[in-house]
Length: 640
Image (tube, rainbow, N blue to C red; front, top):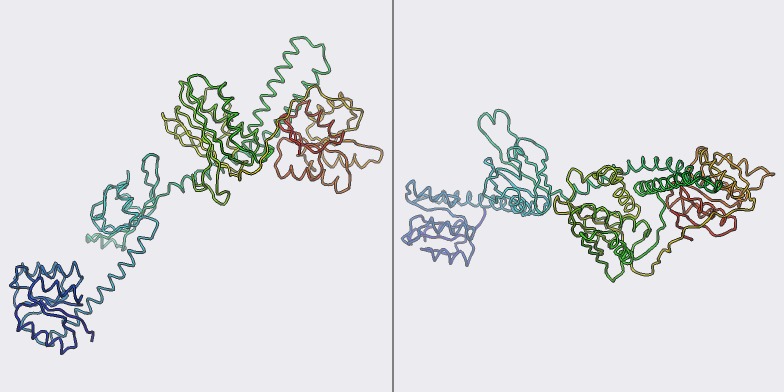
């Protein structure tokens, strides 16, 4: 038998003392007897008893039912009512206080014992339920998603903190209120379909939520026919950040596929352009007495070839296959240089604001490509403001958790923001802006490669790009690069355009090139420049020629990508065989990894196709003269 601390509230002294005596005989501890509301509160506060015996009809101004209500709500003390009689109205009032039993005066000790045992059992069961409910509430409160319990009438019965916030935001309701819809979705749509639903909410920017509702019990068709209904558990979670990252990953996958195609196209175009440009250069050198008309046409060929070459460079930047000269540098001075350039390029109707701080913001990168990125973004912003506006460029250093950046890459990021007050980008257009050849400009006013090039440059620098735009209010493009500690950093010196091509002294050059037109153009150019020239269509043919005892080759000028055996494998075999012939590599695109490998094989120079005549002749001359390894890009050279 369980023993309990019990208080008695009874204004009949004889009844109260008799009840106390019986309870003591049963082994219970009676902590006190009271006759009024004040006595009951005093005993409750002093002793916190397990149970109260309460006379319903007291002579006090406050009857037993009101006192029981106070004991239940404030002190969680359950009550057994004592009464000699009770009308229906009194009994209905008493039910509200949730008593654990009733004893009708007079009662036997056996009845008293049974009633106490049943009451204590109910009290213990109720405590367990309360503990379970408290644990459940604790669990629900720690769940990162919003969790709410709805009754059969769609009323919110229970909700954790997250759910309360989401319900207030999406439905404008709280606990105790009926839900009619979440966002634009009627609540019945969620209840009728056992799957996740997207809920869109437009605040300062669009936020995305997912919601699902599950019944707490499964009802059969018979149950439904009989009008039975179920409660519901509603789960809501915000997935704005996840969707942004998902869309970003999908866009990167899609752009990577397009980039592979673009790189293949660029490779073929480079060979065509190389043949065209070298042929035009050769004609100008070999035919000094051309008519003015013919010279003008050759100039058009050179000019258009250069424009095509620039487009190819943009494609290669996008496809992340262009060669980069990566080294630490401070972005701030580059931004100051950009400000000087834009002052001359922007119309008076556009107000230029460029914030370049005095502190260092160091990244590892190719200054030429980063400046190209700045220019592309700035000119795009200019075009978005045909009637004028504000172009704001800002440089800052931000922590890795901004814009959901991967902290495994860097704790700190250098952020470059280009902001315009222009027309904004339509939501239907936004997912496509980095795709090559996609443009919203009129025909003839854009190639659709500017932002594609920006995207590729950012990817090659292991950075991230984010675009926020609102129609009629402008666009913010944020570029993030992993930040370096502002220790020592170098400034890349610009190279120079070479003058007239240099001639040789009948040295022997072996051209290894699978494209016949390019091979012939190189043959004629080098032959004209006073070199003896041999040709091979791939690395295997080149090895056969180099292994001929009667042939001495001073320099190998080889393409990188060829069938059967490419330029890299050719170099590896030559160096393995301890052949120290000078080597110059030509390629349409070159990764940093391959460039490092070629340098380790003491390749003298790497030339980007389509190479200009002056660069070709100078690279050959330097290689034959035994000058150090170098990498020539876009007419600029960086010695290493």
